[in-house]
Length: 311
Ligand code: CDV
Image 1 (cartoon, rainbow, N blue to C red):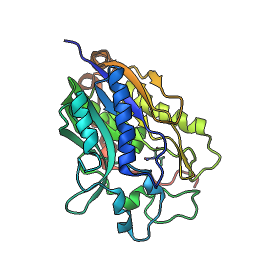
Image 2 (tube, rainbow, N blue to C red):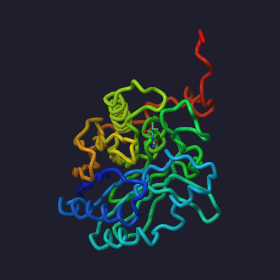
Image 3 (tube, rainbow, N blue to C red):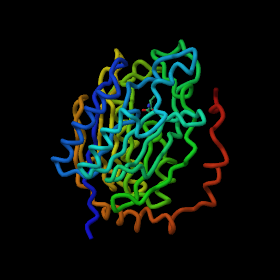
Image 4 (cartoon, rainbow, N blue to C red):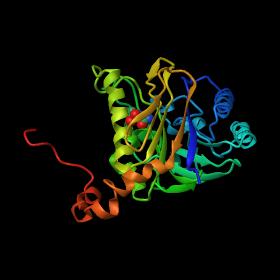
């Protein structure tokens, strides 16, 4: 039986603060129709797909940020997206800010099957940035203020005939993200990102360097775990703050098989053969034969290192 998943990486161009959820959902539906026309059966949208990247905006009163969050999913504004996905028989994944019934805030992604049912949820674990307003930065990145670290780990799901996992933006830079899923046999990791093209703490860093780190992270995660990686950007200028693009799909050999070269709404479609993961999983990255867990204790015992010698 064929194990091809034809996936559409659905990049969103900028979303301004003033843009409504309804207007964004209309753009997502337009991308879904394009994806369907190109033969995709699974569409992946970015992190915090429904709104601007609001953690760049500081609210003294944290609760004032709650209007960026969804208290239900589907919500009235996203119901048309779920309806369209069901009508087209399209599975999907997208990110949003989640407010739970008991008042917790997460940066969340979901997996939705072809019938429109939510079958998987992931809450972002590696939250970058800071809690308080930071005058030393060129811009704010307040994810640690507005979100709690995810509490669901990195499960994988049987989905679309394979083993699927999710991550969100900064997670893609951490080998632990992929390895925890790799140890469950993951065959495709889907993730969305909002990456400012300027490093708030290092203004001379070039966008080329930031793209290099993005590709390096996704490619190494794919290769070292013999998995497909689908990474989807929200790109372009949001109210004067620029996010880089770089939506791409990486094969289980770590090679980029396609990349979007603009910063607008657009799709990248690729027929991903899940059986292409088997060779790596049975040879160089056959974890059960080659891993030496007796030497890995520090990975979970210690969070970080002290100051380097000489400081
Ligand atoms: N949304 C993110 O997690 N962005 C981070 C930035 C702040 C470095 C990223 O890793 O792309």
